[in-house]
Length: 198
Picture 1 (spheres, helix red, strand yellow):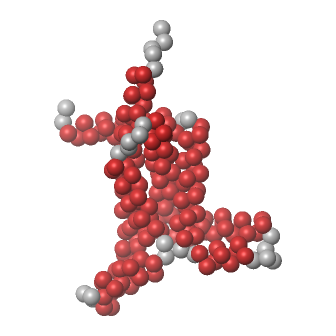
Picture 2: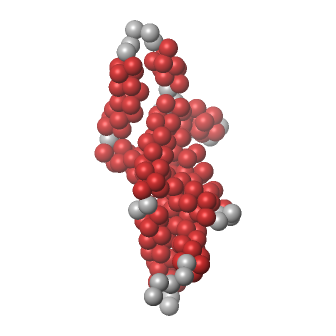
Picture 3: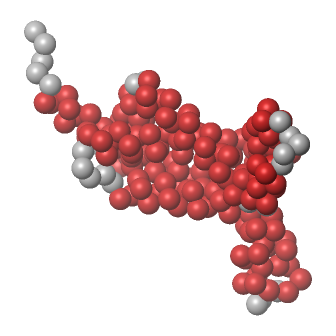
């Protein structure tokens, strides 16, 4: 079997194991909850002053507060465009799946893949920089870029901002592959321990 076929087989086994875990209702539900929570965290971590104002505003009803808190991130996705918004939604959905599969593996087995945990963390960090505002990426990258070309610092920050979301998607895909592989081993161990029904 050549390397490509073996690699493809590993991906299929990893995805099937992840799907098997997500079909259990509590892990499927937790994947959705983590995805929504991660999405809200990404948006509101960059807008903490507005969030604090909304929470403390006495003239707004609870329904109005929830409408703004839950609706503003969706408006941000719509305004960011189809490709960038789709990549963001893909990222948060896959991040929820990875966290759910990791929780399953950790509950069943004491150890898990360092690559899965590292890939998930890397995806979160890249998403925080990539999904955020252009000025957030610029404030980190602009001083470095201004050492070489002073006039291009803002454009370099925007390009890095636009690229980081795709780097985050690739990192979370790798984390899904490694966490799914760990889950496949865990499921195989559980299946071997279960006596075969005759």
